[in-house]
Each structure stands twice: as structure tokens, then as C-alpha cells.
Length: 254
Image (cartoon, rainbow, N blue to C red; front, side, top):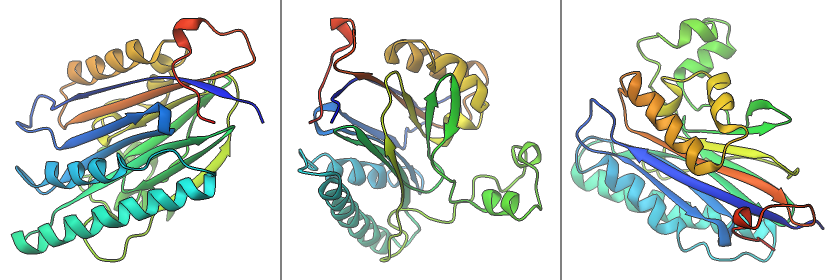
């Protein structure tokens, strides 16, 4: 089994409209885990929901197999779901959060998500969305009612159909695959994708170190008005037995 190294960075900003940043993120290369959570519910609510997700997932630890990693992820997310649901019930209002995660173990990865925060893979210079939005607009696109271009300006484009904390039954979607040398993954809240096209994300994230890519992506969102909180995590993948600059050898997930 090939070993892989990971160079990653994360950036977040409240944007130019909202006073509070309800996004949260987690970057734990040693555990093979990168997460973005986008809270909803308003001041002192959305950030509680996204914070609960990050708090529980931060205890994931080092796994013994991809199956163990997935089981740990589901267990922690279930705990967060219960905590947010109880908080929402006590508050008497709808509180929740999206979540999207990249998990790495050996030469394999898993992408997991609930809601419309996204994970992209850039491979051979081409960007591909690994996640599928849990949103009304995505359902309308798939039904042929809306075109992707019309969907960007549809008035209910931010209505999601799944979230952590809005009910006791939590359904998480997963996709998995095998790493290739020079893969790049972009994990983000919809504050990024509201203002940037997929090709623009690829153009910035491909060929740049993660820190520079994150900073440029957030800066471009701010230039375009940043109508929501924005959070982005960029992860570059390198095969350990290939020639890689030492500055980029940041972590090995066995």
C-alpha cells in the first residue's frame, strides 16, 4: 500500500453581510480528517450547531481501518446530532448545521456530507464535485425544472433538505476512492460556491500551496460581496515514495 503525505490549510471569514461567523472547521492531518460545518439558526445558534459537530469530530483519533474510521465518524456525528437537536428543542426554534468531511486512511479516502457544503477533487487539472447537494435547488435541477445557470439566481437556492440537528434520524452520504499523486481536495461552505464557479475554484486551487489557495479563494469571495460566511479547506496529496519537497511533507496517515 502506498503512503501519502498531506499539505493542508484552512481559512474562514464572516463575510461582508453577517455579523457572526456560523461556520466552523477542523483540520487534523495526523488523524486524516478535514471538516467544514456551516451552522444555521441565527445568532448564538448556528455557531453552536457547527461548533458541536467540530467538537465531537475532534475526538475521532487514529483509526485502524477505513471501516473503523467511518464508524467513528458516524458515532461522533450522531452524538453531535443529538446535542444540537436537544439544544434546538429547548430553544424552541430550528437550529442545525451542514457538514462535509474528507477522511484519509492509507491510500484511500472517504468523503462524507449532510447538506449543501461541498467537497471537490481536482485531478489531472480537472475539478469534480464529489458531494451532491442536499437542497431543494439540486432536486429541481435533477428533475429538469431548473437549469444549473438558472439555479444560481433562484430565490430559494439556500433551502437545504438535510442538516445535522433538525431531527433524531441522521442520514449521511459517503463516496470513497483511492488517492493519486498530486490530487487536490477543496472542502467548503456554500459561502464559497455562491460567488465562485467550479472552474474558478479549480483555477486557484490547482498548482498552488494550500495556504495561498485558501487566501486567494476567500479574497475573491470578499471582492464579490461575500453575502454569507465563507470557509474553505484545501488539501494537497503527495505520494511518499515520489520526490516531494520536504516543506510539503506535513503528515503521514498510515
